[in-house]
Length: 197
Image (cartoon, rainbow, N blue to C red; front, side):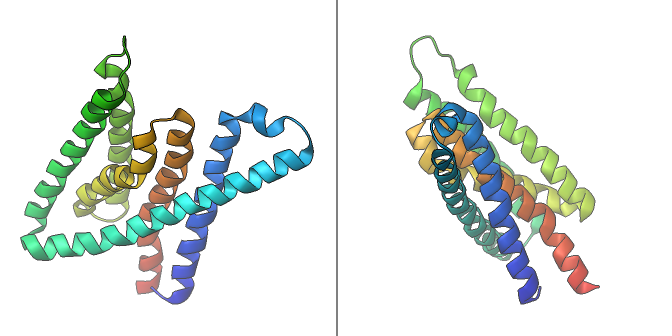
């Protein structure tokens, strides 16, 4: 990939992540941002775009870290099949942790573990869908790495908000991460494919 495409990937991810997060932020606290003058809305929007741009930068660091980790995993286990099994175990472990440890840490009286199962299961279903699209566009071997990236890497990047467990920050942090991660995953092979042609 040449430098122009790297810059395109960086800037497009930054813009898409920050805009998606800002939209969700406006929806979550619409009354706060629309109360008062137009300047209040404008400064609130700039703040949202800035904070969500920072989250999309975290997503980009995670993406390139995973590309490195994937190569390291392939070299360490000397077999894509074995490395895929390791990734499947890690995916299951992370989904379990998202359910169980959040339930143990944050459950209030009357809440069941089911309340804490919805989000991780939806993330897993979303990861399966994106992994299917990635494998369909590239090759079947891309399915498990794509699923791992969407579920595990996104969760690791999301940890600061998960430890706070405040709904506004959970969604404000999660949206740019998942949108930016999805974009990077689905656009990278198109950029490299064009380069190879």
